[in-house]
Amino acid sequence: MTAAFRNFTSQPGFTEDFHRVREFLVGINAQNPIHYDFEWGRWEWGFSLPYLDTTNLSKIGVWEDNDKIVAVVTYEQGLGDAYFCLDPQYAFLKTDMLLHAKNTLCTIEGKIKVLINNADREFQRIAGQRGFKPTQNSEATAVMDIDPRHIAYTLPQGYSITSMADSYDLIRFNRVLWRGFNHEGEPPTTEKQLEERRISLSGPHLNHNLCIAVVAPNGEFASYCGMWYDPHTEYALVEPVATDPTYRKLGLGKAAVLEAVKRCGQLGAKQAYVGSSQQFYYQLGFHPLPGGTFWEIC
Image (cartoon, rainbow, N blue to C red; front, top):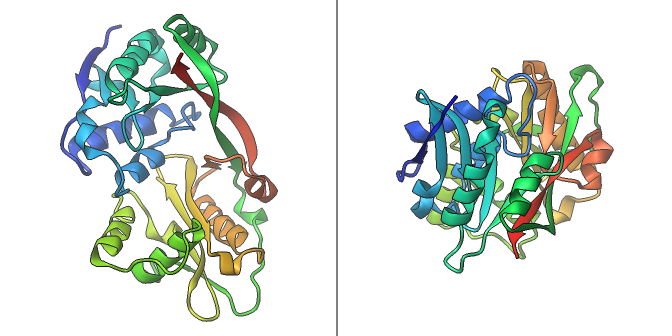
């Protein structure tokens, strides 16, 4: 069993190479998700964001066996961090993947942090032998088993549920994300800002019917939950979730997330994942999975 290295395309956007990596991520998680910390939804969401560094895409590493992708080393926003996605049958590539991250995905100053799953003792050993040490920085993942029959929530009087399929409104979408992520004041509504929001909703596999907003009595989007689900898989990814500070403590975030999860369950999803350890998600029925720790060269 062998694998040949190549670089990812330098062309930005939803290219053929983008789709091939996405198909690889779908495939390795098809039966029992093993890379739940970097599913296809996270890959597609990253390519939908305006702050993705598209000037260094060709530094993403790809390994193939007979034209089939078997491993990928990527960054999420830009150089300086690295994530490993690997077909378990090709575990012998771990050293090469780590060295690619160290030599190619570092910043100009030579800084690099790599995320290694806490349950992968072999990868931890390899990293330690190459001079990496674990840090206090980590990423968490939580999962919920979905049974649509048992998902319930209530909304305050005057509030309602909609989706981006039914109410595609970039002004309201922009506002709830701006304020929900604690930016002060009213959001900019320039052409550039709204175009960036439009692009964030343009993922080729994003189902707008699963992107849920809670509408306040005055018509504003009070809370929002994005959801990534492919009917060829058995899992969904929650990303992003935001509630306008004006409307917090009303159960609106809970309603948005549970409605999105319920709709995924009705389409066939059996689990929903979220990259978080917030108590908010645990109270909704998510429970923690083994997370990952960032390792750095000391």
